[in-house]
Image 1 (cartoon, rainbow, N blue to C red):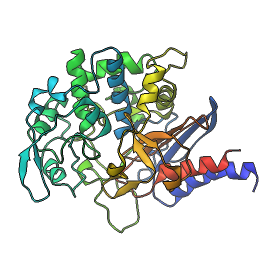
Image 2 (image 1 turned 180 degrees about the vertical axis):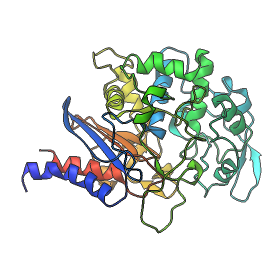
Image 3 (image 1 turned 30 degrees about the vertical axis):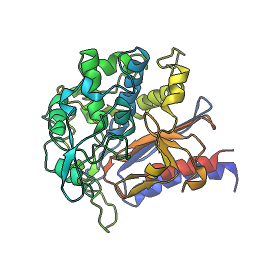
Length: 393
């Protein structure tokens, strides 16, 4: 099989997922050695209502919000406004006297303070409502923390009144830690999060179409979301094939509320805008070469910090074999243990509604896939990533 035939597999895989009814629309972008190497799309914005994809679709990127918050925290570290070893209670005193609840429901006082580093690495002891195998996750599921009418500060107050799942630093558990971190950043800078992101990330990177809300004039470009309508049931999987079921996210992820923002999710973006962010996450610089983070901080950001006894990383039933976790996302530390094509040091993250990115500095490669299916069972990002690697010359 020649190179051209291998290259066409990227498009074929995306179209197959659309034609199979797994996704309504898929978009991808791959940058190799500084140039756009593959860019395409398949499907519709809303296949159930026969709505075509606009020229530049807008996506809810969910947890692909997290690396933005982590990058700002590291900027504050460089400026001396935050330290990785700072107790979070320095900024949020209500987190100083937490309790831990075990699997039997017994509670005890926490012994170890939560540090900023614990928030960045998801080792603080928090959880998510969709992790129902965890007692704390079940408590979260009964709370209001996903209610979009709640402010970020209000969300943090509710979390502070609930127990931790484990002693800080002792385990890795995906969690609301980045929402807590976002509130710490607001307190450290005495500014609201949207203004901080605009000043420090979006304006320098010319990301004019990324934010926590979408102007009325651009609402028609927002891709429809399918799958679950409640983040807390993200991983309540069944044996049925993945099909298009319209989701209503107005109560959890509104597009037109200027008072809504979070740290762990909440951003809207386009694939071209997010490509600018991934370029920064790969280099620490803007497209013009202006450094936003130093070379040594970039090295620190993408170095695994998870101990062997806390691996493999698991997000509920989903295992990430071969990966550790740095200060902003997953990091490939064992290609021999990986179940997909990758490179040592490859890093990135994903979003709950089937968005995904990876950065491979060994291959000088950045890839992004965008779709909108909340709680999907199809590993779209892995499939596109594999198609990209097999096509490299």
